[in-house]
Structure formats: structure tokens, C-alpha cells
Image 1 (cartoon, one colour):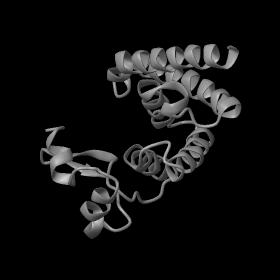
Image 2 (spheres, rainbow, N blue to C red; image 1 turned 90 degrees about the vertical axis):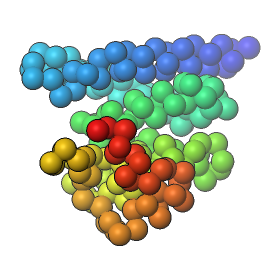
Image 3 (cartoon, rainbow, N blue to C red; image 1 turned 60 degrees about the horizontal axis):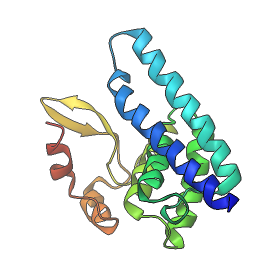
Image 4 (cartoon, rainbow, N blue to C red; image 1 turned 30 degrees about the horizontal axis):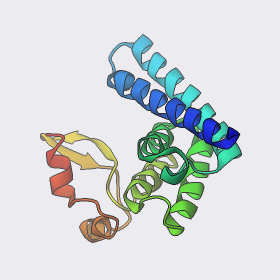
Length: 168
């Protein structure tokens, strides 16, 4: 069956892209401009490919490509920081998938925050970290900072303090 073969190949392609992403993510904020550029080129290539995949298949859900490859698609969208059109499309398709029960709200929340920050807007769930001040991670500005933990709980994300403790 051609479709099953295509989606199996797609699953492998997505997981391979995520593995390459994991291997090179350390270069994202490297002091070496060549390493940073290599990271940007990789994420741009992956973003372009995810755009093609979304055009052909819609959002690559776990039902379509398996749990690992669906997570890989999310990671690729998350790191398409210089391709807002790709992030916005992924956000839209993933929202539809979540509404239909085919994707999880936790990953959607991270992608929503990432896209908002990349648009220069305030995030909702406090998932995106701007930097570190006095040894503590500081989130990009949030719409409702006093409600962040409450909002995080609604999508299955641990409280902010627990989340950032992992980065310390």
C-alpha cells in the first residue's frame, strides 16, 4: 500500500531530522559564528521540508506517523524561528489536531509561546526563556504573569519554578 509506505518513510525522515537537530542544537547560541550559521541553515532546511510535509499531509499526527515522528515534527516547527510562516501554519494545523484529539495541548502551548515570542508579542504559558538574571532563568514577558502556573496546569505543563529548576 503506497500511503502506508509513504507515511513510514515520512516517519523516518522526521525522526532523522529531529536527531540532527538534537546533535547540533548546542550550536544555536555558539560563540562561533560558523557554528551558529550551520545551526540556522539546518533549522531552515528542516522548516522548509516541514512546510512541504504540511502542504501534502496536514499536521503529521501520531496516528499518521507515530508518536516519535509526531514529536519530531513539533520540534522542527519549534525551531523554525526565522520562518514565521512555517511556525504559524504548524500552529494552525496543530491546533486543529488538538481540537480533534489527534495531538497534545502541552506541545501546542510551547509552539504557541514560541510563535508569539518570535512575533514580538507576550507569551501565554511562560515556556520561552529570555535569559538568566542573578542565576535564575527569566521568561520572555507573559500576558498574564500572575496566572502562568494556572494556565500551564490546564495544558499539562509543570509549574514555572519546577520547569526552570531543570535549567539551573
